[in-house]
Length: 237
Ligand code: CA
Image 1 (cartoon, rainbow, N blue to C red):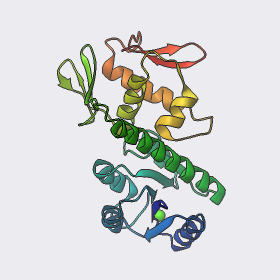
Image 2 (cartoon, protein in one colour):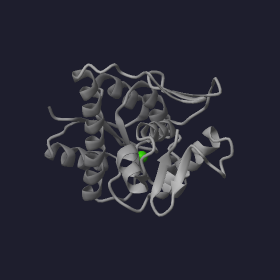
Image 3 (cartoon, rainbow, N blue to C red):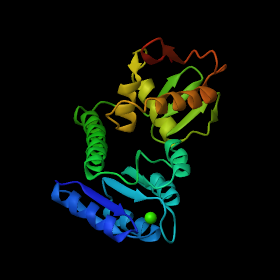
Image 4 (spheres, protein in one colour):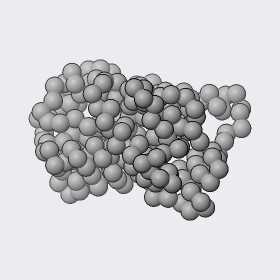
C-alpha cells in the first residue's frame, strides 16, 4: 500500500512542487497551508510522514509538531528558513525527526523522505515480528534503579519519573535494547533519527550528553552510557 504524506506549507508554489514530486514517486499526498488545518488533516489521514514548514499562519510548525507528536507516530520532517530555527529543530525539543533548510533541492527532499519512511517501515516490521511469534511483549526494561516503561514511554529513576524529550527516550531505548554492544554514532544516527548520511553525528553526542545528565550519578564519569574510544557508545545497564 502506498504511503501517505501530508504537506504543510503556506507558500503555494513550493507546496505544489512538493506535492507534484512526491505524487510522481507514488505516494498518496495531501496538502494544507496553515497550522490548524494541519492538525485536522493529520488526525483524519494518519499519514506516515508529515512535511512541516515552520512559519505558518494560524499556528506555527513547532506547535503543530509538539501537539501531533503526542498523538501519533508519523515521522515529521521540518522545513526551516532561518538559522535561529535550526537550533530548536536540531535540539528536537519539538519532536521532529529530521529537517531541511530552505532552499533545498527536490533530490535532497526525496532522500530524506525515503530515509524517514524506511525507518518507519523497519520499526513496524520489528513490532510485527514480536506479535507474529507471540513473544510476551516486555512492558518494562529494568536496570537496577533505572526503569524504562515501554507502554507509557516513561523513564523512571529512583522511583521518580524523569523529564525526557521524545528523542532522548528513543535514544535511550535503542541503547538499552542493544545493551553491552558497541554502537557507532552513524549507526545510532541511522536507526534513531533515520539519517543515513554522515556528518551530523554531533547530534548523537549532544543527546547522549543530555541523557547522561539525567540518568548518570556523575555525568562527567558515566557508567551507564560509556564512550567507546574511536567507536561510539555502549550501554552498560
Ligand atoms: Ca512558510
